[in-house]
Structure formats: C-alpha cells, structure tokens
Image (cartoon, rainbow, N blue to C red):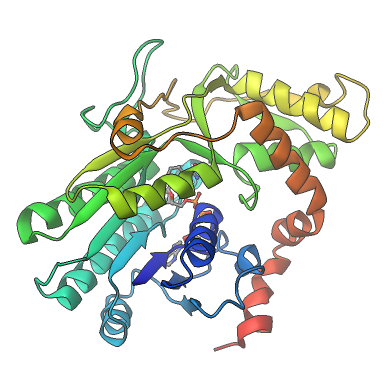
Length: 349
Ligand code: NAD
C-alpha cells in the first residue's frame, strides 16, 4: 500500500504521517508539502529516518508536477490535508486560499483520476475538511453530515468549494472519495498563530492575549492525535462517497478556554494564581465571526467505532507541557529560523 499524504509537514498532517508511518510499517507514506510558513519538517524529525517514509517538496497548485508525481508512483490512496488554514490570513488574502485550497485540490483530483484511469479497485481519495463549511449555530443544535453548507469566511468558502469538487469527481467520474469535516484541533506542533499555541507563547513572554469581541464565541476542540486516529478508521473503513463528521463533543466558550489555559500556565510557571489572566486584552471582533460550532460525530462513532480518547483538561495540560518542553521549537518557529531546516537536511534543491 502506497499512500500520498499532502500537507504532512503541517500541524495535523505531521500527526497523520507519524500515525501511518509508525502504525503501518508495511505501507509506504509519501509526504508532499510545499513548506509554506506553516510547513515545518522538524515536526517529523523523529520518523524521517524510517524506510517507509519519503518526503517530496512540491506544490499542489503545480498541475504538471502533480501529474508527474502520480506517473512516477502508483499511489493506492491520497490523504489530502495541504491547505491554507488560518481564517485571519484568509480575510487578508482570500485569493491565495482559492488558489491553494480549491485549484490545488482540483489538480490533485485530476492527477489521481488520470493515474487510476478508471481502475478504482482498492483506491481512495480522502479529503480532510473542516466543520466551518456548515456556517454558524445559535445556542442550540449541532452540525450533522446533512447540514447544508453555509460558509462565512474566505477560508471556509474555499474548503466548502473543495469539498464540492471532491464530491463532483465522485458523481461525475466515479472517483472513490471520502470526506471528513472536523472541529478545532489542538496539541503539539501547531503553528503559534492559532489560539492555544499563540496564547501559550504570549503568556511565556508576558505579552497581551488578544481575545476577539467578548470571548463569547464557542468552539468544539479535539486532541489532534484523536483526529489522526479518526482519519485512520475512515481511510480504512469509510464508505466511498460518504462524509463523516469528527468532533470532541467538547464545546468551550473562548474566554473560558483562555482562563483555563492561564490557570495551567500560572501553575506550570510557578506564577501567582491570576497572573496570566492580567494579560487578557479584548480586541475588535473578527469580521464575520461565527458564534458557535458544534459537531455531531455519532455517525463515525456508530459506524466505525471511533471515539475521542482524552478529556480536554488533560489534553490542554499535555499541550502546555509539550510547548514548555519544546521552547526551542517555538523560538525557531516564531523567528522563522525553522525555514532553513529543509536546506540543512535535504540540500537546497
Ligand atoms: P497547517 O497550516 O498547519 O498545515 C498546512 C500544510 O499544508 C503545511 O505544511 C503547508 O506547508 C502545506 N501547504 C500549504 N499550501 C500548500 C501547497 N500549495 N502545496 C503543498 N503543500 C502546501 O494546517 P492544519 O491545521 O494542519 O490543517 C490541515 C488540514 O486540516 C487543512 O486542510 C485544514 O483545512 C484541515 N482542518 C484543520 C483543522 C484545525 O483545527 N487545524 C480542523 C479541521 C480541518
């Protein structure tokens, strides 16, 4: 079995690559990543020596490269995570999100379709998507797989569009596809522009903690390794053409999450209780900020037997411990120094 994982040098992708490379020694895993600011090969330092792992530096928006990669290798499956992933960046530069997330996905779909040439036995194209495609909820209810798409940010619009393309390739060409839509992930190796690592880093450095609006927005949070496990069971057991929602059943109001994080940081850094909370600074709300996301993952639990493995309080503490034990990683990432890693490890080609 030879699987192409795209975006494997990013946050979730690195956990997925590690999970498959170590969990399935008989599989070959090719990690394709263009190493944008969010891609960091140091995330895979512990497994890069393993013989069933291979890295290819490449951009999914390069159609010719995608075609030649699929000609050179007979992939049995694709797990597609490469994307621009940060909502705030999508508000500043939406076109980049359309190019990478939509066009890049179409180029990959084309390359897979051409390579498999209608011989779909044992083949699978798996698109990793987000719950943000479903829009916003009020105080009640949850997103199910039947919830109509209603994206509000350029990021979620680009992910919704790529989901539609993936389904269209199934409907039109019979390409064997599967999609999962997951809630917010947290854990080690997340780029410190996202809420949890950003705030850990700011607390560490005594910098303000910018909370949007009144901190009333609600998100569901999932331990990233539980997402990787869900991807494993869906890759192996999901039905062609189906969508699976993935979530932690773990809703938190942003401000409550931030307070919880502050309390953990105070205790880990031996600071007086309440010290980190003083850094909380309320800032103008994000444009189009969705109030609440909550995801019903009962289909995945029922059909494929997956369930989240750890409670949020424990996962948050593990996350803080990881960032504090890996302050070098944080310093490298925030200074941009990590970007010379590829040249050092793989040469400048
Ligand atoms: P990330 O930003 O940490 O990683 C994205 C990776 O994609 C990086 O390694 C980057 O270098 C690579 N990449 C970007 N553009 C590329 C291109 N043109 N060609 C090749 N590689 C490219 O993102 P993440 O948080 O790990 O998210 C991974 C996927 O999961 C995304 O598709 C995202 O939409 C989805 N997702 C994320 C979350 C979350 O909470 N982070 C939740 C649900 C779904």
